[in-house]
Length: 105
Length: 179
Image 1 (tube, rainbow over the protein chains, first blue to last red):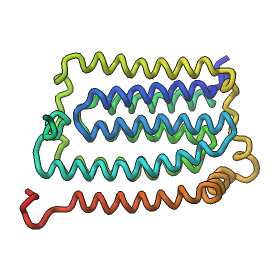
Image 2 (image 1 turned 120 degrees about the vertical axis):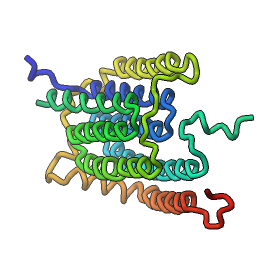
Image 3 (image 1 turned 30 degrees about the vertical axis):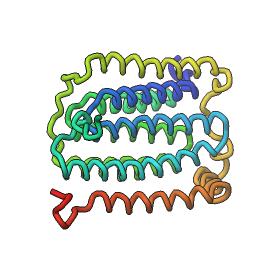
């Protein structure tokens, strides 16, 4: 019976792990800094899903409170990161991560 | 029913995530990110975290992705990136191995601790008890009770981020450093 099967916490945790892996792969492979930021958001969301799942599984509301703070920090991080990208883009045309080699020795 | 919700939301999450890392156009990647974020919000609802689901939609899908799209449009970087060229020779296989290893390790950890987590997702007993706004009451009590100092610090963090971004992104008038 299909209706008998209920998704357990493990399903959500495994899904979050897969999402985190996809995000990590994207950060390592993509070279557009904007897309790299999006992949970082994917990883943050995977961790948020883990927190909420464990908050439910362990009946502890603190997991959801942590997610609130993670969201605030993620918003601040995106704002600062995009500000840096805008400032860099204003000085040069290339946008891929390979073009930003000014600090190379 | 719960299984159906999980399958649909998981399909949204994974499809959106694959879209983010495979679409060569940044605008398409940002829209795929919206799909993933909505899937995560659905999962939050199925975990009785209604407040977080609302915040997820408002902050992530409403603010962060719009910020991404604004920057993409502002900078005009929505030209397609060629995702087929590979600047470092074995970068992609290595990245695949590393990320698959991370996934494998976490899945192994989850599977071995299945007894601890094996209970059905029945909902957070304390939060779903009583009135429908019990979840937001509990979150608020915890934030403004035990974590009020951290909450105040987040306001400082946001203020610093806003001021720093405005300073970084403004145009320099003197023309010396600017374009």
